[in-house]
Image 1 (cartoon, helix red, strand yellow):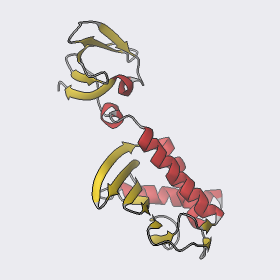
Image 2 (image 1 turned 180 degrees about the vertical axis):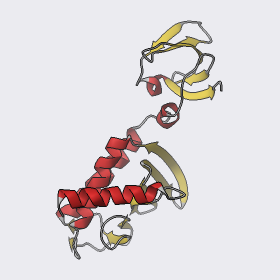
Image 3 (image 1 turned 30 degrees about the vertical axis):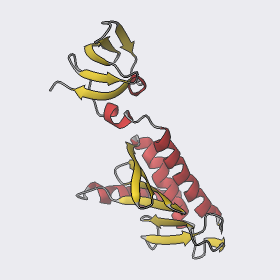
Image 4 (image 1 turned 180 degrees about the horizontal axis):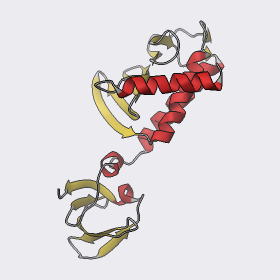
Length: 211
C-alpha cells in the first residue's frame, strides 16, 4: 500500500470514529496463562486500558490516554501491519490447553479479524510487529503513575487541595506564568515548587479542586 493510500486509510478511520457515540477498539489482545488473563486494548480516542483477571476476578485495571502524536504512531503501525498480515500469519503453532493469545484487529482488511495462537507460536513479521506494539502499550500503562490520567486532566488553581505521593496533603497557593505549581504542605507549611510535567511524580490525588 502506498504512503498516500495508508495516510488516507488512517484518516478515514479517525474521521469515522470522530462521529461515533463512544470510542471503539482499534486493537485488543488477551493473553491467558493458566488462571490469569491480561487484556490490552487501544481505543479510537487514544485510550489504552490494561486489565488483569485471576481465577475470573479482576485484580488490576489501569487506563491512560496517549498524546495525539503518539496515538497516530500506533494507529499507523496497526494499520500497516494489518494490511500485510496475509491469510496465514501463523507459520507454526504449538497446542497448549491453558496458555493462549487471542488478538482482535478492528483495523485493516477483513476487520474485525480474530487470531488465536499459542504464546510459543512462530508468527510472521507483521504479526510480530503488532505483538510488539501491544507489548509497548502494556508496558507504558504498567509503568505510568497511578495518578497520571487524573493529573493530566487537572488545571491547578489556587486553593486546590491535593494528596501527595509521600502521604501528606498540600494546597496550591500559586500557579506561576511558566506553569510551575507552588504547593504548601499542610503539616509543615513548607512551600514546594513543582515544575510542569512533573506533577504526577509529586501528587497522588486531587482531593478538592475549585471551580
